[in-house]
Image 1 (cartoon, chains in turn purple, cyan):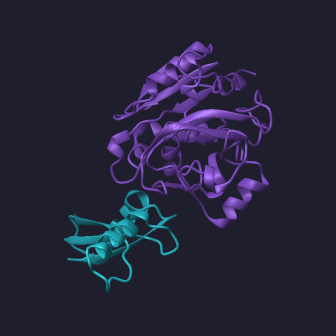
Image 2 (cartoon, helix red, strand yellow):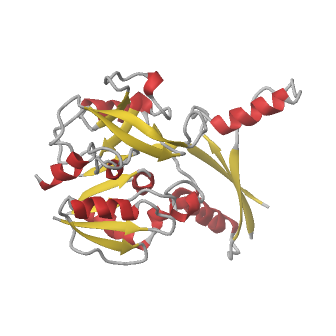
Length: 225
Length: 79
């Protein structure tokens, strides 16, 4: 499977995701934001970081970069797109994913391990996970507080467009285990066609037992399924 | 021609930064302070002679980049 990782000035998880993809047998290419064409890609990853120093709003400037025009076209043609952390913010700013990521409710930058529950597995990204499986992921963000209209929130729930929700280690989803104030403990969402996934936690940091755990591996191997 | 653009969070959107600023001012003794919301301010110069044309261009800038219409409102004024 061919993957492309988009790199902006200020991206800082681009190498991590590249290492993860290569380890899991993707043929990966790095793509600079000024490029005007994409290499052949089955998966495009918009990585984490602080693109353009988070100027204006997180992800707002990156969303208007040259390469994003190509990412939008590819996404609309059905290409798989994964936005992690700042990548999720970029995807919401392009409109590929609805909603917005606001400042964390407690106004603190959060850098820690958290638990998420796999709420929906009927999609390309999660088919190797078990429904209701609890995963330990890492978060590192200042704006991860997902917000959207009540109508869209209902659609996300009704159409199973939420793959991950924040929970405790036993899988209980409640406000106490909501690190950033996200509506309904949302940690990630899909578009309607489920070919675009945006998520705040970093699965690419969980691909090696020696430094963390393997909970992120299945997200990538699901795509190879 | 010069314009100002005021960007504010919509009234239903929680403004945690504004809340902290408000709390701090109240802690400093500003007890009559009732409510405070934080926003952004832009000054934009544009090479146009026609005011309404200029304004519509600024509006376009707001909608396409400066403002996230899901959570923010904006107000354009000539200065």
